[in-house]
Image 1 (cartoon, rainbow, N blue to C red):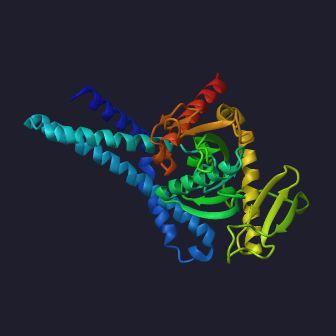
Image 2: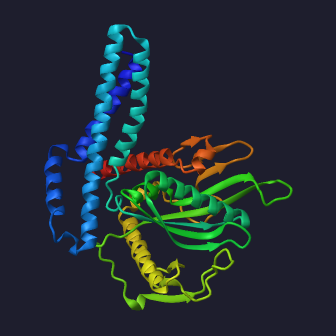
Length: 375
């Protein structure tokens, strides 16, 4: 067997050990029996929120077990095929099995990183906000491109995407947009995207076809679970209503249904511009609770997050990633150094490798910080 192939086998085996450890494989059958017993309780759906949380927890365990079994089976099957091909002198079988192992290694590595998403809120749903920065119309257009990129990423993950609010640009694109993205580990994956994103391209709005640089900021924060109590006294908030803006036409909102809530102690502002004012108030309060929770998480993890907390203003000096479309094509993350020339793939939502690289850096930094704390 070739040394490279043996290396792939060793790495997949290592990933399987970590996955088994993270999901506590020896107890998983017992835990599934407990879940099934609770689900069969006829009174379960008297509390829909609890029932949904229970169903999601059970599905997460099932997904972990299914992933482990898929990787384990793929490893064993292809190792056997290589042994068979070498014994019979069938190079084609060996080549196919080696290629399958290489592909399986990528899956195992991604799942290994995902298993490390064990932060306090990593498994939660998430809010994602995008705001156009320096660059005028260019940045508004860039913000809309980023919005599509993240929606496409979420759809590929099988996540649910709900529009919370949107403000159109004066000439094109959007000035700001907020989504709620729901799915297991949505926050854990997307939290690495917080920061300023820089675009370099030939402007479609410039008749002289000159190259322009524009910026937009992304902010990600977790949806707070029902069991986390965030107290917000009425005296700490100001609630304003206003007429929501859109693209125009017959569907323009002509009532003051949009809601803006300002948290006075922190000056945090959240907005929602759906059709119902009551719904908008509820959305804003949920978003505000999540923003305040994110502040607390940031305080707890300040030392760990310092290495890549670069949000700042949406302009020069604060960017975490550059997307260059002219004079060459390159997307590069300035924190990890990970880059690719597949700009169209990235802008169509192929972000997993960028997120994985940042997650790996975060885990390594956390391990170093914990080791230093133990000394």
